[in-house]
Amino acid sequence: MPLEARDRTTKAEIWAIGGGKGGTGKTLLAANLGIYLARKGRQVILVDADLGCANLHTSLGMAYPQATLSDLLKGRIKRIREAVSDTGIRNLGLISGAQDILEIANPKYSQKMRIIKQIQELEVDYIILDLGAGTTFNILDFFLIADQGILAVLPEPTSIENVYRFIKSAFYRKFKKVAKEAPVRELIAAAMDEKNERGIKTPYDLIEEVNRMDGTVGHELQDQMYGFKPKLVVNQVRSRDDITLGFSMRSSCSRYFGITVGYAGYVEFDDAAWQAGKKKRPLLIEYPYCSSARGIEKVGENLFLHRQLDLDSFLEGIHLPQAAKSRSNVEKDSLYR
Amino acid sequence: MKHYAELNYYHLLDVPTTANSAQIQRAYEIAKKTFGEESMATYSLFDAASRKQMMERVEEAFAVLSDEERRYQYDLKLGLKVAPVETPVVVSGSPLDTTSPHSTVSGTKIPENTLPQGQDVSGNFLKQLRERQGIPLQEVATKTRINITYLQFIEQDHFKGLPAEVYLRGYLVQYARILGLDPDRVAEQYLSLYHSWRKSSKPS
Image (cartoon, each protein chain N blue to C red):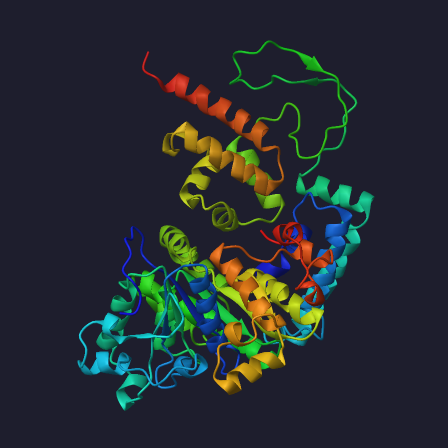
């Protein structure tokens, strides 16, 4: 394992990056947030959980990894630590999903749970999972093990729609895991069918319905669900309206779905990101001063500090794209809550 | 959609009850972006009729909250403010209050976020105020992270089921903040009922 051993008293914090749609910048975020944390002296492992479509190694400009998740599944290696490759970046390791085999894209449930368990036991400070596109059970289950579930969204109707779909799906998947009683599980199954006859359209409706069934169960479930707080990152921002989209989505999720979503920040549209991708070089290393790199660092800082953007500060005019490079520390602090 | 349409104006615009006019203006701008016809954020959530309904409510909310007099009347309706009284008010009217002497206080305009004089802060009072503001108890539980069962006990004055005072005080403070009330006054007054109950239920 390329990362030096350290004494630890706490488990790793897990970040997972999903979003439902391809091309929203999940891999870009995963790789560069990893670099951001590694530069802060934290030991980080990136996991390419985009089973069947692994790209992290390419975006980091790495040679084909020696051992991957496929080897773990096939039993060629016993422990996941043997699959950690050296990225060439200090403090940063990668577990690749490359060397695709048919089975890797569709692991059995027991195989998936074994991977998940081993990921959770990795002895580092941070683990970042690149989940890839879609809302399959595999992707949702990886998302739900995260301490910070992050959703990358583009300021486009199709991407936004997919993120809402992802949030609903992840919520129902988690709800199903914590609900033990059969009648409640039947309710959840009904809720997941959009044309259900009970008129359950949103997670809020579902909790109301469960409360009607049995007040105690509903309250207990709600307690458990409290921890479900995905974070939004708006990628490829081109205008102020694109930035405020994050606030609108946060408000919509809270009011319409009854789900608390945080707004971790945004990344400006930037040709440099595309150029770095073409060169197979990580953005934060190749073009560290470009606006998208700065944006990713800002997002990293917010996630690291468990904070999010504040609407009032933004609308007061402090938080404007062109001010990104020259913001003072005082301005920065007042932006957040 | 039902609960969304029933939110009070503050919750609809996502502003605290103490928001100043600049905050309300900013929240209104965002709400228009969120629910307007061109909105990407809610395009897949609302049909045209629901969107129109939401926008009408947003406009209504802004019209009321941005007008000082109309906002004051609305706050009275929600129980956030109390109309000034000119006649003397007897402070100690509660049968449970056995310690303080009778006194009178001449009425003055009561500052916002305080409690009406002579009003005991019982659980029922908190519950009524919460319901008038259109806040479901679940929302209080979610925002404060207080177990909803304890909130129910507080509202029912079910003192026996409540946790130790050190925790109870914290719960009362948080609950009061959600309702826009003076948190210290709420805690003090509710706890005085609690103490009276404890005294009277000790074996003689």
